[in-house]
Length: 95
Image (cartoon, rainbow, N blue to C red; front, top):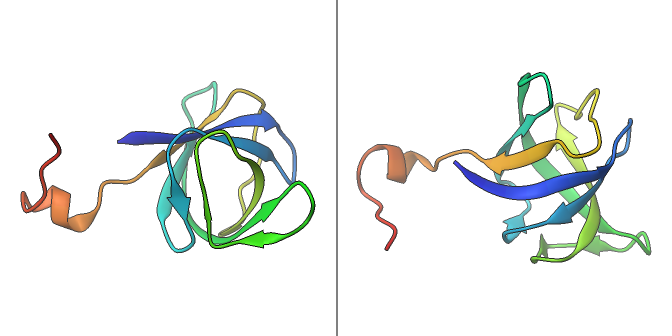
């Protein structure tokens, strides 16, 4: 699994800092300090000026709307990309 963001400000609407490109529709997983895991799908990416984005790039600080909602997010938690089905089937390779 690839880390895509770090939670900078937790709570009901967490502010995240993107580490690797993230697009709407991607499946990601939240991992908190207690190693509790929550899988979600990205439905919207919103920048700090409240403008919607199609994707977020490294260094962007954004809010995410997900299905289901991210809950109990803590600062310094990690969002990581779930493996794509193609990668799990052995069809994808990263060099």
